[in-house]
Image (tube, rainbow, N blue to C red):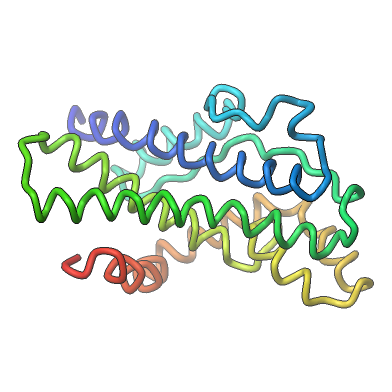
Length: 211
C-alpha cells in the first residue's frame, strides 16, 4: 500500500500539471482566434489550482487506488470557450481542440529528450526523478492519444466536426451532454481489451526506441 501511495504521490502532480497545460492551450488558442472568455476569467494561468476540479481530482485518486494502479481517470475544469467569437465556429473549434493534444505532444517530447540525455550522459539524479520524468512522458502520450479519439466531448470530436456539413455538426455538438458517459465507457473498453496498450506502444517506441 505504501508503494502504491508513493506512485500516486508522483503521478497525481504530473497528471494535474499536464492537464493544466492541456486546458491552458485550449484557452490560449481560443484567445488567439478572438475569444477573450478564458482570459477574462483568468484561466490562462499555469497555476493548477485555477483548473482544479474537486470531483475530477477525487476520481483520479479513487480509480488509481482501487485499481491497484492499473487505472487512472480524472479531469480538470474545462476552459470555457465561446465559439461565437470565431469567424468559423467549426474550424475555430477544430484549432482549439488541436491545441490541447499539441501541448501534450510537446511535453512528451521534452520528457523523452531529457530521458535520452540522461541515458547518454548518466547522472546520479535518483530513481524517483527518473520515474517522474518517465511519468511525464507516459501520461502526456496517453492524454494526447486519448483526447484525439473522435468521440464527443474529446478533442478529436472537434477535429472531426470541422469535416461535417453544418447541419450534421449542429447535432454532433449536442452529444457533448453525454460526454462523461461516452468517455468512461470508452476508457473501460480500452483498458479491459488491452486496446490502449496496442495504440500506445508504437508511439512510445517512436520517442523511446528501447521501450
